Length: 132
Image 1: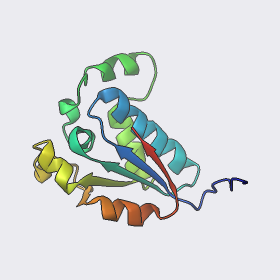
Image 2: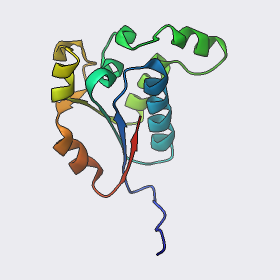
Image 3: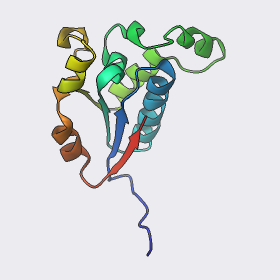
């Protein structure tokens, strides 16, 4: 059985389940990297991962880690989130995940969609899914 390589036209779906800074940071690293290469990217956050899509992301576990990363010359979460939005990454917060994590929709960045898993799957179609 041969494996067909994915091309830039096939979307990348990133499923962010965890609410740690490390996983949220890398979700945005992957999202911006793929988008910079021309891939359509959908980042779908659920449960505590939704904190990464909040205007104030200090609810992420180990949020203070960001300062250390930046001090070593690595882009911080704020910079990566801004780049993702500029590159057209579609950001979706799971409606049920927001409720599970007790996050009010008003806490989200202004351009984050609120939808369910069916919307995520429809957006990525036959594309690749990465889970963090």
